[in-house]
Length: 278
Image (tube, rainbow, N blue to C red; front, side, top):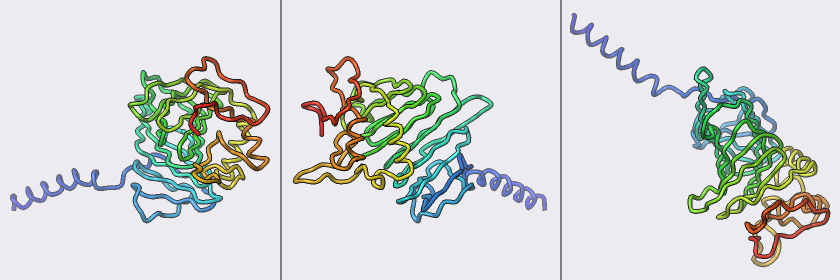
């Protein structure tokens, strides 16, 4: 009898050790807004499931918004992440301990436009909130910013806060520190452009794109350019409609490393400097 009791206790102890590792991970954020068709890929795997307000997101999950859809996540540290239509974002890591004032957050943006507001400032030597894209790595400290992705470029627009920006390739050296009211572009395989002034016109454009998406606002983001051998359009090369002409007026060209001071915002359509990538 004693052997049976001892065996039963051992089984219960092993079960108690196993259950925490096999149960679902704790939610690190929840959907505070869902408009249109928003999908959640648990651990990044299909099939995707429809997202609903108050649904939780966990480490490893991927959120994607379809055309005319929008999603907002409120994370455990009160950071707010909003995805425009036709955007995709992964929660690569999200650890937060308010008692010890520790945080490690890593987001990966794959597509579209994302507006992120990090409210809590934690005093650390290194940034504790990171966003990665296909061309850039952003180190965050209590910041409100937009991340805009097109096939060969990342635009980083900072209304408020401080943001470190670098290329995502270790072979590409050079980084910048954005201050409130500045923006930069990170082309594939190049360091960030010098900071330039973030104008009210650019902010209005970004706010519009948050509702319409990059391909739904008439601005041509992410659409193939016309002509033989044409590349995808970027925020720097947008011919055509009145909206696109406005964007040319409000988004200055990428500056080469030889420039020492930011170029002023011009009042007429501008072209990228000679020798800059298309």
